[in-house]
Image (cartoon, rainbow, N blue to C red):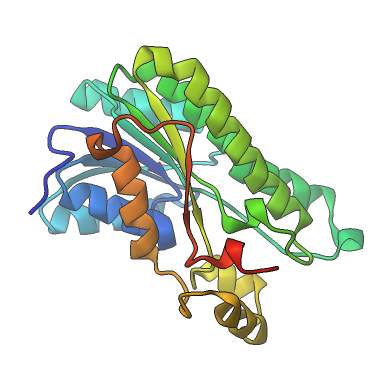
Length: 250
């Protein structure tokens, strides 16, 4: 079994379910100690317990990732126990599609806080706690490259994640810390099921050149590649894991 992350410590936001859970499980299966942050402590603990039951090591943290202290406290706790932090995956997101006229201040604040501010705090934590060889992976979206109906805020937030990734890569590169992003296409997670009705999912499927939707494992594999030394000279980049959909809309 590949043990690319043996002796390394990772922190994953939104790691209790969906794409985040798949990333947690792959990191752990390849030897990493994994810190899991979720808004719900019980779900984070459930994911950590599953990792431990499978023979891995994990710590659970509950908290709102839009708040700097949530990320900072988790990083400090991991370093206190394991003396290092090597990988940070900013995956957490809350999203609601809505006509422009129906966007509320609460929706806007929550999407920006969970999907954008948390990435800022994650990069800041990496800058403070990582040493040479560290890797940050931000989960963006194919929406960063497209104009999706009734998804203005989501498209904007994910476009912003790409900008954060590029700039942080320039700032942290001299320290030996890499910063990259992954842009998934449609993956049938809970968030997609809430926001996209089955007929629109069929349209997305038909427009995807590979004629299938993505899986959480597709995204986890790309994220773990970027987190590992296998991508040691790649930084500031975005890997699209979308079956070609961003090239097919014209």
